[in-house]
Length: 352
Image (cartoon, rainbow, N blue to C red; front, side, top):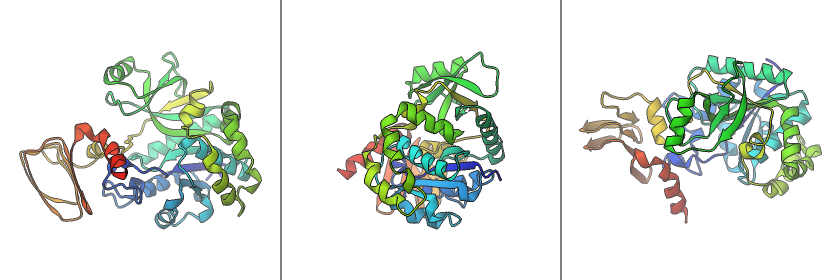
């Protein structure tokens, strides 16, 4: 294990498109969504610990999930859990974690990874990550792992790289926002676009230089607490100052502005498990393309549905195609897969 390798696991999201299973009180990263025996955050931690010392893996999460993190990751100590007192997107929490790591080890190399993605080929993931670490050891680079697109997805941002670049690690031309369907089709046809999976790799020196250059106000705010980091005064500083930072993503705050951005096209299978439809892709299906989690089913004239209930509940369906059927506690959701992106809006309206 290289003591200079660090990881930041982003575990503060709510996963509202997976409602009613994923809730504000118990988000999807703490669920065993695929029936594998491990929750998504447990799989992520295990995958990263194959290359990174366990004590160098930090978990960034909302303060309300502290006990869930410690319960599900027994190898993690409290000081490795960074508690956000307010939701401020990815840039502030990455800056906070980077300064904390710098104080521990100014020679650190770090990967930032979401806690709720599914990667089956963990050996290839580790090889790809090692390749990125090797590159960032030699170069002042901000790196990302780009995902090979398999269809014109309109739910992801894209990374455009230089078509003429024959190196395995490619210079990024620009980040592109989530496209409409026709634009997404043109991205795939051109051959030099990758999905932005939100996995970043860099040296602590490179990312902090970028924050200083592109986000000076935010950088100054978090630098004020540098002396308190890794001491018992740290949480008090964060509680008082974190909410003052801008609500902005790392893509918008840094990556879209920097010129030293590179991408490695990933060679492992990947699924962001962002919606019920993406979960349907990963689950075992019957001969009519129905995927079932826990339920006992009797299906007639039913195809391409995903059915999720408590264990052994009997579900009888006739005449449904491409639907999400989820029974969880006091909620029953029956919703077209084609409208799954709207589930997040339903959750927001319910809270009003």
